Image (tube, rainbow, N blue to C red; front, side):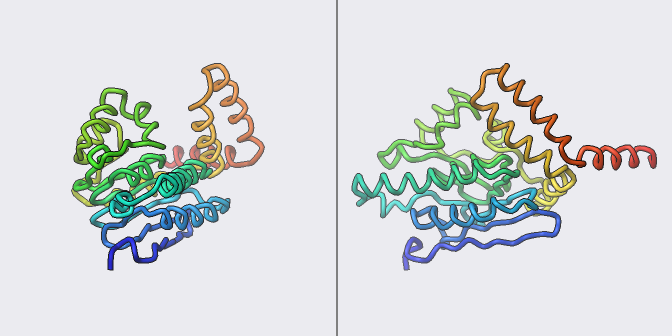
Length: 258
């Protein structure tokens, strides 16, 4: 059976500390079909409403985080088909971007095309040493679109041109050097690196994290002075709860014990 003929699945696991892990599963190649994109987006929209969550971890397969589009589908697609498909991927990426708490993509194997866009829209991008990244659409006779538009802001215009016009696939070390990803797992492996990141985020104030996440999104589209004003309002709003007091008391108590 062709991988795209299997039913995409979205496996969800939760911890008591507020970490939700979602694993995208669509066969060996983990292709991002239109059906898969809608199933994943539906699941993530439900998870986004949980006010107890601090971190969403998105994982794929071992050999491919997400392998991109199904080339057999693309080859025979009509204009209407391709429009519907790319909008399904856009919806998935925007759903991730709109999640009000921190998001992390944990990447093994190949992370290509639409799959790389899904990884890129996450707040934190953690990769295994053997991960490979690329936007090879031009090698298939089509351009890279939708959230490929974020790449100049992430890695600069020169490197965006390199990646999109060459269609080449780059290793995790180079992706890290370019700023495409946040971290590459060390000698202890991907799960150990993930545990470190989870511990960092679990220690943070959940309300502060949500305010900060919203501010980062707002700053992306605001002139400087407006961004500063919104930031001040965000800081003041944090004091509508007792979270600052509780976290500062804990910080001071820990400092006294040292």
